[in-house]
Amino acid sequence: MFSGAMTAMVTPFRQGKLDENRLREQIEFQIKGGIDALVPVGTTGESPTLDWKEHARVLELTVQFAKGRVPVIAGTGANSTAEAIELQEIAKKVGATGCLSVNPYYNKPSQEGLYRHFMTLADRVDLPIVLYNVPGRTGITMTAQTVARLHKEAGGRIVAIKEATGSMDMASEIMSLCEITVISGDDSLTLPLMAIGARGIISVASNLVPAEIKAMTASALKGDFASARVIHQKLFPLVRALFLDGNPVGIKYAMKLAGLDSGELRLPLWEANDATKKILEEQAGKLGVSARRA
Image 1 (tube, helix red, strand yellow):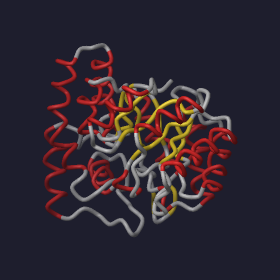
Image 2 (image 1 turned 180 degrees about the vertical axis):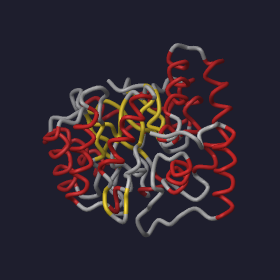
Image 3 (image 1 turned 45 degrees about the vertical axis):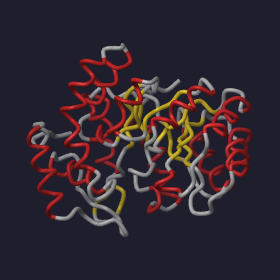
């Protein structure tokens, strides 16, 4: 259902408030770049710092601005099942195509708890779910067996998994147990994961270089891994630099250089250090993105 280059969108701020005009510009830039889907209010969208109304507003505006030209996969994850249901209901109401639901964080549920959490979401709200396995953020890893169980028993309502464990073996095990769509959750691993069967990336880097990420995934989906590898190698130094001081710190600074964002973050996130800024400036310059405008 979902494949190719999908952007984990930043949330633009101006003087502490949601910048709705900038959000519209960013969405137009993404669609012009050929992106396959938009993913608002995930980790890159600073979801932990948005209040309930802001979260709903970003989802609503993304659907509104996209105008049906690309799917919108709404970030709806929470560590409370009840809250996740509410967010999923909001996503359904505003017209999202699907939702991205992260493993409940901080409370570290068991595998049975994870299973019951996601089955409850699938049973309560009729919206396709993309699971999100990112232990570095949540403190818990969903096993391949739990993923397969959910895919089998959810009756087509759990359609994909964003795999961000950093483990090729985990992705291989998931694909060996079931036919769920695997999507990379790490820009640096997009090409390796697609080589073993993943169907695309929910990308941070595509906020800045959507056309390039699109070209890489399109080549890989066609089996042209030689062309995809050239793009991967070209982008890799930038991708590595984007995460030196965490996400979305790096991507927001790079987008500021390109005139695509104010670069403003919300505490407790803080701007990149001077050394990281210098590296990002160098890499953005090498790719010719510093002069781009939305």
